[in-house]
Length: 294
Image 1 (cartoon, rainbow, N blue to C red):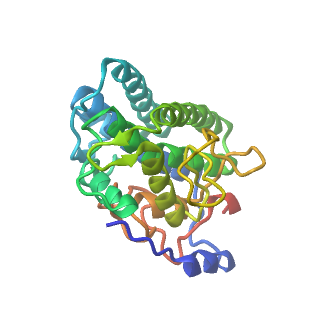
Image 2 (tube, rainbow, N blue to C red):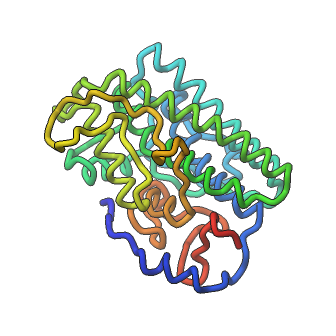
């Protein structure tokens, strides 16, 4: 179950504390690697019916709950491109990190979606591999998170070569997120079977859930009506941004709060045993905010 309480006190207290150990470029790249492992496992299972090989996993345990998705031929072509991109991202990061690369952590890409569907919309049994729409909704849950995480991380990279790696991956993730948001928008008035909930509303529910966990910085694919009650959505919102045309930026704390299921200090949801590396747990002494620097 998605725990919606956010520990703001801990996140504020850290600004007065010197970090115990400053994060390095490789700590940041390993944080990105954990996120890329999740995306690659999801898409690979959905497209090919299996996850990453042992080498790409870095001998990590891989994921549970993934299946080959029931996709239309048209969407399968798109999903295959996404899968191959994400697998390449994992490989690229491992190449840059070398022996400093962490193994991919244990990941839940089955039951985690069911629990998030329950938390966001009070629906039972949501499973992302059942249909085109479900697959897109599942991918929507984490693609935007990766974009905001990388936006927050890039300014903290010191080495130019490392910066080029992360700056090269980040726009590809943004392209992916834009593809997903556009495809979902095109299906927006369709009902998600068997819940009798429109795609527009399903997306908004997931966006609201991420926003509650990740300190806001999230938007659905339409502009909600001003009265809060109308069911008509006259304007698209395919590009989530801060009102100044800039992409949202998230800290590691905010990212972990989302992917852990509501609490950055307690692993769960997509990462039942936590991420691997420096940002596995963000407790009182180690709660670093990337955008504030070391």
